[in-house]
Length: 385
Image (cartoon, rainbow, N blue to C red; front, side):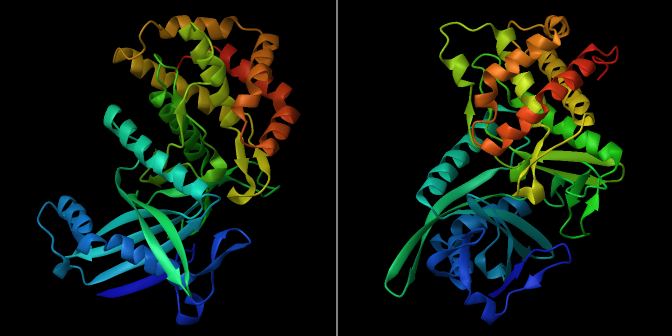
């Protein structure tokens, strides 16, 4: 079997040579593993994919190809290092089978905290995929651990294999002062490019719609935390169409302030979700991992419209329980800017609890954000989705 190791880049695949394989394995930006090399990491990915004599892999390939696939048919595996983040290393695996190519994602967690988080996410994604149709999350296939031994030392890595969304790309708001807050699509095949105005609007609108689809009006649970800086939403463009997916679900809980209440008004709970959604859609990280950035007012309109689209669809499918969308819209439009700002301030610790940099940026822009939000809500075209 031929194994090809490479790095993903906007200029195409970069092959990994023997010298590169001896370099220390980076577990986070500027932090290398105590003893593992990059070669150890690639080998661990290989061992995980081919574990149990390849039975889990051939079962998935058989499902994908709609016919039985055996290990004898697998002559080549491409293992592509896609990115590393604060918690996981992301790799894609590409396997040619009888003229077609099947691709999967492998997420690797090194630290105990990251492993606990990955295990929780894997289970949660499976639950959400089971209860929500259509699903905007990847299919979670299997999870396990792989041991790496090097010079008398041992490390245990946790890995999860899941669906790879082909031709979908990470995106971030531009860090170019001249370009303002335009969206840059990180296309590793065709090169990075600015999204058009239409594409940018669709990205935010669809991301907001997805999060609203996953909101539970009975338990008030929502997908959280999420952040554009983590590349949580990815996009596929072409032929005048835009498609957005959510790559993970790190948690699924109500705001803690709601869970502490004995009885909650469902309209108030949905209002707090709406305020969180429209606020956080404006937050990103410089180059995906740097300081917090703040997007312009057009994001608010797109987020509001995505939210309303989902609420109307859920209402038509009788998924809102006691909530009537027209009544909720009336509630929104009855709020004054002072009331909106007071509500956001009173829940800001929860909205951005995972990042002090986000908190500072929000506080610097909060008054203007309230003006932007109330302007959209009060516009005569607000309900035209």
